[in-house]
Amino acid sequence: MATSVADRPAAQSGDADRSRVSTARRHLYDAENALHAARQAHVDAWIDAAYERLHAAVEEHLRALAEEPVPNGGRPDSVAAAPEKG
Image (tube, rainbow, N blue to C red; front, side):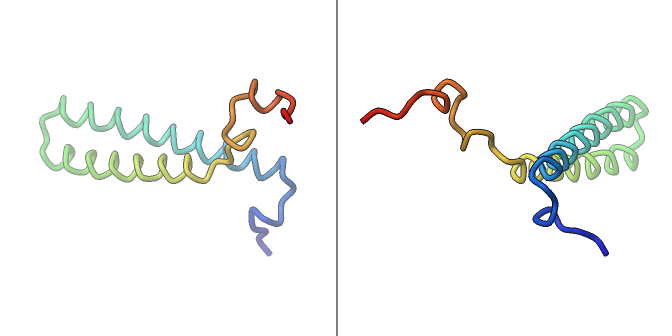
């Protein structure tokens, strides 16, 4: 039986999120390289396929970034560490 992200301990969940971002980043890099190679080859079918692959990689990367937890509730470390006033 597979476990969901919610069933995992927080540390593992964070690791999985970072892993998804790293994987998506690698796919984006690979897709950019594939497009470059296709354009250098001047083969229209390869260029079209590479653009489609790059578009999918961009979407994957944006989804992974959106799902990544924001440390300190999105506040800079200096603000998060500062004592509350009042």
